[in-house]
Image 1 (cartoon, rainbow, N blue to C red):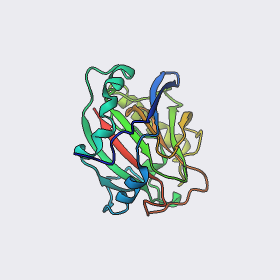
Image 2: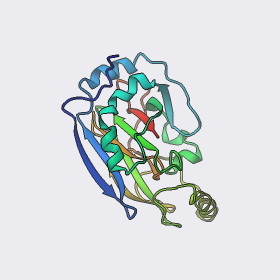
Image 3: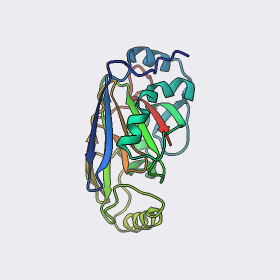
Image 4: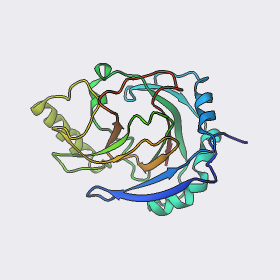
Length: 230
């Protein structure tokens, strides 16, 4: 099967680490041979709400369509992330941010993690030509956690609850740098047709500019492809 999400033959990779925990990030530039085709296809998709966490709309993408984006990289990812085996498809979405800051729920004003499994990987492909924001990574001030695994989960939750009671919830706005509860430790720029791969249990969130204006048209808004592996 031919898919517009096949990895480009001109893609280039770079491995970096960040934070005290030395979390790995793999950046892939020139990821797609024809990103405009993918955007045009996205504009014909039916987007909808998928859960309470993402501040916008999503359209599911099948394994058959999305996995060619990462299949040539799986051996490299096993090595770079010290995985026990080659990761497999979990879920994938085309995603577009549509919430204005005032529409954000409390949980959407905080960094999050996708799951507690260290072997779970997030693959994020940026498809916004305006390059309005990337992805930022955070450290919880009270605990020093930069990632949350099963052993840390209850401590993280209790600490977050206590700190919210002490200082209150963040205002209705997208996180932009340090807060009372979290310190930003790294940011990946959302370069058009680049993607980043990182562990899903790291604390992270969208890194959007202060003047961000949501747009629901995939051809104009902050469109990404979010592929999850484990």
